[in-house]
Image 1: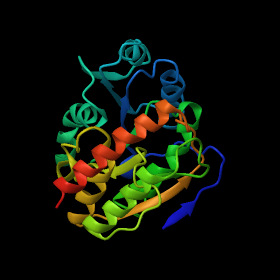
Image 2 (image 1 turned 90 degrees about the horizontal axis):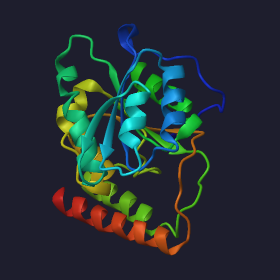
Image 3 (image 1 turned 135 degrees about the horizontal axis):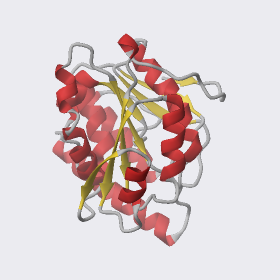
Length: 243
């Protein structure tokens, strides 16, 4: 179910009616890579509204986002990706009632210049080829032995019958009308699994698109394994919650 996309940077992509997408970025301690991410998004989506949901960062992420023209929604403490993204998404719920709602793009703050490739994701939804388009990384960087991702695939298939290759990708474009069906997001790292299950159960079409993206990856280190252990705990929690 994955489409292979060309590696070149696409032309700026408006949503139906000529509107630029609305971008929601979840970020935690991404002050070093966030400026390049924002610049890439501004290049392909000139004039787009950008909301950065800062998950209690201590490195100046919120200040960097504001300096680059983004709206900032900030949690004073670390509440996890799903919680922070929910704070940002709540600002966007009114879009669902607009007569010509834009596409909403969700992404992580660590994509740097590769974020420009997300225009292809937005275009997939704008063309009507999917209601929710999920980016699959064309090249895997870092990671462990695949246990957490394997469980995520299994959990989604069990809960809604959808087979996925990129079950926990945070790079997603969706129709704004979908927001009430998927917000609030599942807590912490369970956000993407919960979002996919909720979307499919609500009757929306989900499609994966292979893109040339890069991000800050965790490898086979103690820190990496601890990170994936926390992910797996959250995956199990959202799987149980979606019975």
